[in-house]
Each structure stands twice: as structure tokens, then as C-alpha cells.
Length: 159
Image (cartoon, rainbow, N blue to C red; front, side, top):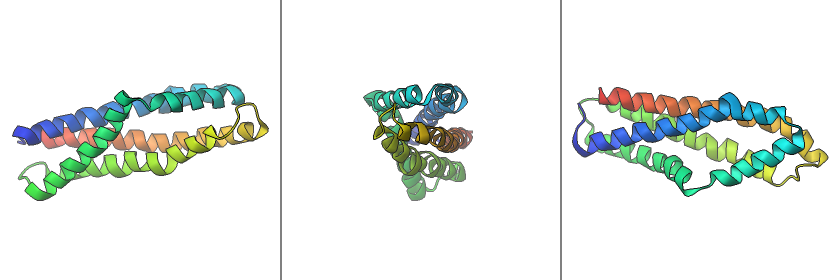
């Protein structure tokens, strides 16, 4: 069984990736559906407000801190190559870094930036809104599954 500081890192990995999975799950299961039901001008305005509000210290600590933690866990795992949990630790780190953090940077954030440039009541915003909701949500499903998978992999590494 993993013990000592490595145990603490792994437990923090479970908590961080699990918390992020929960946030993303909420968006995938009801927030985006609710926003998509609004008239485009209201949906665009609400999502832009959410995107601004999301960039807060508490969320960034959990989201970015989990990415750093997953990278640390991967490096420590490669260096120490523990007798138990190696595969689970590397899978958990890869899932979060490449399945959650990566898509955020290459798929969700660029869509957020494009939406932020649009005035909510314009024809351009109304035309972009349905595609934004569909594509952003699809990538959010990926992030949700990857974050939950990372948390599960870390839990399995502890058993």
C-alpha cells in the first residue's frame, strides 16, 4: 500500500480530481441544458458571466492545483516506481492532464473566448450560441469523464 507523503499526494489527487469532476458534471447534466433553453441573448450573457465568475482563486486552486498535483504524482511515480499502484497513478495523472486539463485549454477556453467577443443581442451571437452549447458541452462531457476516471484511478492506487 502507498504510504507516507506519497499517500498524502494521492489522497489530494483523489480530492482535487473528484471536485473538478463534480463541477464539470453539474455543467454537463443541468447547467448547460438550462442555459441552452434560454433565448440566445440571455444564454450568451449568462454564460459570459459564468466564465468571468469561474476565474476565481478557489476554483483555480482546485483546477490548476489538481493539474500540478497530477504532474507531480506522475513524475514521482516515474522516479520512485512504487511496487503497488504504479499503473493506476500514471493512468490517473494522464486522464486528468490529457482528458480534463488539455481539453479545457484547447477546446473549452477558446470557445469561451469566442463567445466573450460577441454582444449577447446580436445576430452573430444568436447564430453562434447553439453550436457553442453543443460543442462546449461535448468537450465538457470528456472533461467530466476524464476527471472522474482520474479520481477513480487514484482511489484504486490506494487499495
